[in-house]
Length: 439
Image (cartoon, rainbow, N blue to C red):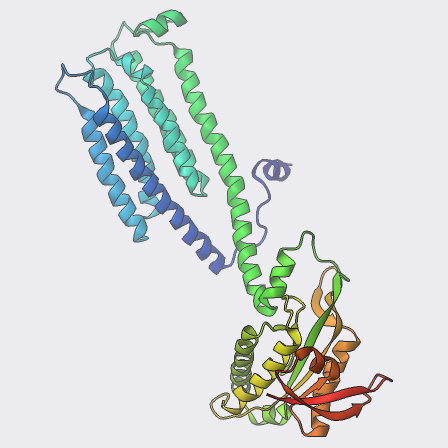
């Protein structure tokens, strides 16, 4: 029962323990919020100083002027607090003490008004300066921790209660209490109900803000967790596909996809099995990572998107997740640049890798396949199968790049294509014209 009420009031809380890196990310953002609070406080104290400087002085008859002293102390404390927050040296105890000092200085300042203006103690209860209490309480809402809001509200309520009791008991036999509202407004008498209203208002505002911040904190924590999770998961798919998924108007469902004219490039490392046998596991991973990093750099220049890894092989698409009107030409440029790059590079510090490429252009289906719980964003269709077959046919023709007639036609005259022949690709009945390419 309590869990339902708590969930209704405060919102859904995270069920699992947050990883340490998520906590560290939240703490960094909280520290940034604390810096913002420090700057707001500095602006406030400068505003108060300006206001005090230009306001007419109505207490010229007394030499007791605590306001400039209080503002000076608060200014110095604010500078210290801001310096410590920038250095990430402000402990939770110091921050709690700063909340108490904020409210405490305000209460002492209000209390001093009756001395400054030579009036009975009840005089300060009608000072509009009490409204600054709500500023100091709401200021703590810039940080997503309800504890500081509750502390500020409770200290403010206790401080105002203390000021009320001081008025009642400061002059024994003359509590100056009245029940007449007109007399309360036109004299130094006090109305207990009015002071209770102020205390209740402080507590209610504090409670509402604290509940709102707890709800916001849980949303904030979930948002940070989701953000880091999405950032981590985006490393397992291309940024373009991740962006397409996260910006979709509705959740991606199995079967969601589109058919469009695009180009597919399959790559595979020649003789990788024998290479893998000669390398220790850590050497193999280092070699593959360097190879994939080099290919990825080339793809970034030519708008290619890695749609899928299969061991040492890659399925790369053009004009699917990322719009590209020159998709065929960019695919051919990518294949040629891959050949140049790997011919001049020793991966893992000692291995030269050779890569076979198969390229085809046609109407390709790109979208999500799988189940509701697990999806794979990929491309499929007959045209994709042809590109995969061409990559394998390189072994038969002693080539490293094979393209179809459709790709050669769409790529344009910037390349020199040489017709290899007419090939019946396994799995198809119609023959396919196959070309190799040079720049």
